[in-house]
Length: 612
Image 1 (tube, rainbow, N blue to C red):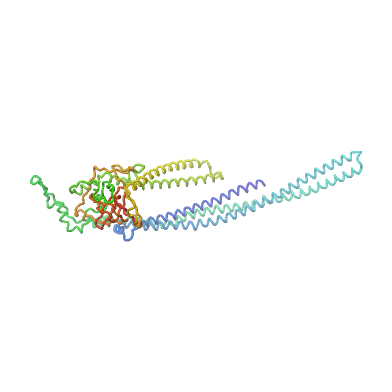
Image 2: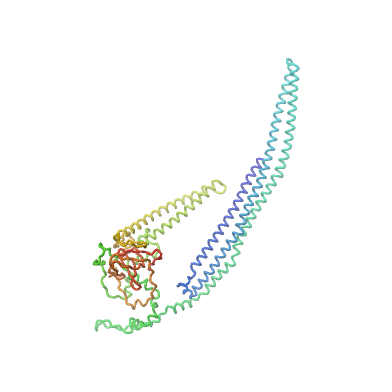
């Protein structure tokens, strides 16, 4: 009985493990299906993201064969994503649903077989108990009959005992012998019954139950094998259509014609200018005045003025006027501090650049490219994060955004490490409860490594948070230090935002970047001959309005004058340098000191971008 009980325990553990294995495989297929659905969704979103927008500039790009080939590739990629959705659907229908239903049936069948086994085991144990009980009773009755016989023999040999006592002892001994005989017959009956039931138990009932369990296990293993085969067939089923999608992408790539594309470029951007003639000799020894040949480049440009409407934007097709002039004309010196009196009409607007004669365009471009602080900002933005760890090479607002982004990334890494730690802790608990599944101590090194990584990431997060608090504090101090007197114009219905900035010295308070005043030159506006060589972009959208608190003469290049109480449109907010870009009308726009105005941002406006 003990042997059968042990075998039932082992079979119960094994069949339970078999069901868990089917559940694990079902979970694996389910996660694979979810991955396919997620992958298909991401592929579709990617294809949609790069599809040309209607009524946009991108539609003009599809006159080139390379762009049309890219569009064909996106369409084929969309069909490719559809095949992954088909895979996910087939996996769910033919494997996940079928195995889930089979697991329920398997659990019910296993429960029935073990119930029959436990009932047979209980019955044979009860028979054994009855046999043991009759055996002990037979043994006890035999001992009592033997004692009664010995007592009778003793009494019968004693001459002093009366005959009545002897007869009584004889009767008692005979009665005990009869009881012992009855117990013996009962014991033999139970023994015969137990042997018969035991024979049936070990040769009929238990082998039958074991056979049923074996058939159940074989069926389970066969079902898992069929599911694995179906898993491969689902993948193989979509391969022909996936191959057609890839063939379509190859065909699209082969349809690209470089010569036709370059021909379109030539037709789109050819200027039609005649090459300049030879430069004649300039004799400085006669009048010390430069005599320019009529066939020089300047005259050739002047002669082409009547056809400028046809050639606008052809000479410099890679530069837009608004982008270039906004950089060349923006004020490069710190803004003047706000005056102490409410109406500083007589206060001069800070140091002015000396008047300089008109310079060639190449000199101005060289001056811009050698400007120290702007090139530092341009390089730092282009590098996208290289530089000091605290991002002190960036302007204040850019530094704040960069630090916030780093903190967000670190928090994501911390969350990922914590998820891994939780998963490993659960795995360790499973190993502790089920040692045959794995060694619980093997998880400890990885848990220790994750704890160390988490501590390091938390230290980094605190470090970046400290830098972020420092930047935000200084921005707030700059905003509060030069705030205009309170009580003025506080009856506005829209939301007011005061973007005031302190005077920027050679090194800004937060150490972001420096200004080299030794290289400052305020550029004068160029002639209309230069401006007409560029296409005008649409004006920047307005992001709000502002009201001037003090008059401003706007004598520096790139600035605009304003009177006290004048309303202007805001088209570009303060980027940390103390200047705000405003517009008076369609033709007049420029920079004014942020501390001289009170800004009312339009909460529905998307804002203007600074093109650098």
